[in-house]
Image (cartoon, rainbow, N blue to C red):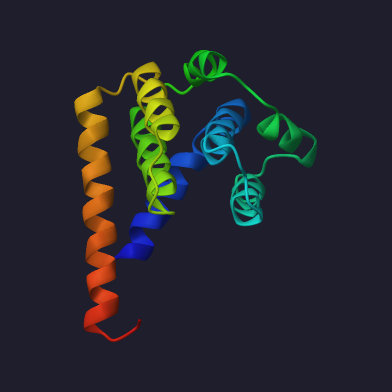
Length: 148
């Protein structure tokens, strides 16, 4: 089931044009930097996503170029696909919660990008809660199946 869901997610991203994919990844890169530090794993994640999305190497530097939240909001407007917008918010929430330390800067960025994409704050909160529930569920599974 999970593989099917991931396949659908990649289909959504694949349906975007190159400029939309670059913006999608620029937003990811900005989120990884929101805490003031980008570690090697975060950089590798975004770079791997760029490769999987077929982004030419010459545009990868564009993804990592420092960008203000205001500029990202404007750039996000090129993503018109509702499913892509919801996927982006979901992935941002997953990335922000991955280190168990959700910063104010991450929350602000997710909220502003979500609103720029036409996603209500209520919907963003719903997605964030779903991500948290999912992480708790996965942790319970590791404990139950003695994978800790």
